[in-house]
Length: 80
Image (tube, rainbow, N blue to C red; front, side, top):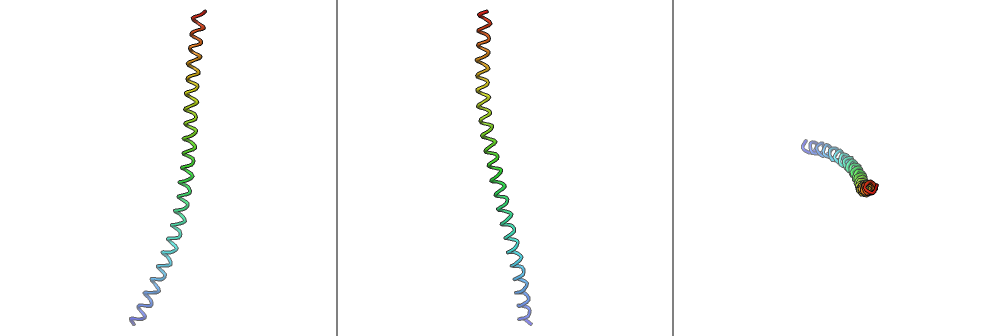
């Protein structure tokens, strides 16, 4: 009777172990997918940051050009 009980317990534990192995495999796959998504999002964020930096630099250049144009306009008006 004790041997039969032990065998059943062993079988149940083996089934549980296999279920846990499958669960771990699924979680590993999910984890890897999430890592890929995170890496993709990081790349997009870096690209957006580079574009924003470029736009800020361009904005500063345009402001400088506008200031120069305003100075030239004022100078031309004062000459007139």
